[in-house]
Length: 131
Length: 113
Length: 138
Image (cartoon, rainbow over all chains, first blue to last red; front, top):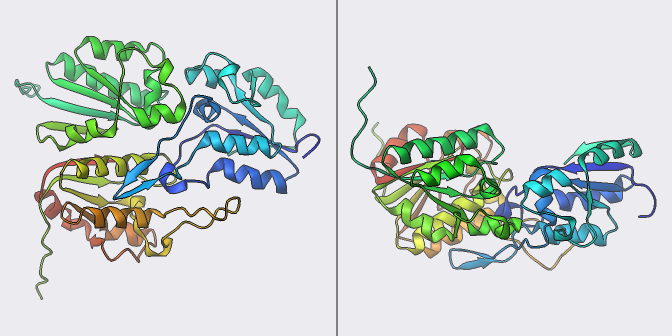
């Protein structure tokens, strides 16, 4: 979607149920809201910054005799947002708190932003929300 | 008068699953430090958001290890967050099997936060 | 009229699971722990309390609703996962649900393998296990 997004969604919670959510988590919802709300930009904050960590991976898990390979995979979902043309930024304090040292440790296409700059960007949007 | 503490060494498994930023999580680590200093065998297992405690150099965890505590972190949770390279060197990543063995051990008291 | 008390098979560990799904990875962690204990030959009973009772509702069906972005991939429901664990470890795993918590949340139709128990019956489960671990909050 071209042009300025109408909504800034801040995602500051994460890892909310790998086995029960699988595909349908916050980032999945974002794709639909982006389509219906006139564009949505994402700011990853706090622990959710590691959603965009280049080094992250999700191992399959065995339950009973079944190996479940469809667990929640936030890195996959961030990629899907980028592919859908959604702007994804990661706030610097969360990056540092997640053990990363620089933007090069984020997925390609995810922008690193300082906390002050992120707050100043609110005026560019019609609506701010937490997801 | 306070109750007399048991003298024999006990074995504890403390499981921290809460985000490390909370005071409650650090208080729980403090519980572990107190038990270890009391001569008990204490394993602290960090899982889910709790693994972020093992990033950086939190003095509370240093106190725990210096008191003889054993620090384990959940490999699945670490990999989920891509933070294995940033873990403190005294944090040992383990699979769930290691924790299951401790929980099954009748001599180990498990405390889950 | 005296009701016949249910016999509670003896286990090594009773996991009293009170955490809510869809909030943290607690459900994933607990199921991983239970699976690991079972694979090591442990006998385990789970007592689901609070919102953890939602995991085994029949209405969840075999699969989660379809992923509209990936129609061909099916995702198992938690009810199916618990059911498959029970079938894989028939003499090692027992799953109980707190009837009060379940009724209080409108979750009244559970897998047939789940034994629903009144809160006051918890003591019998405690008596039938070597140790107990409480996980999560109601």
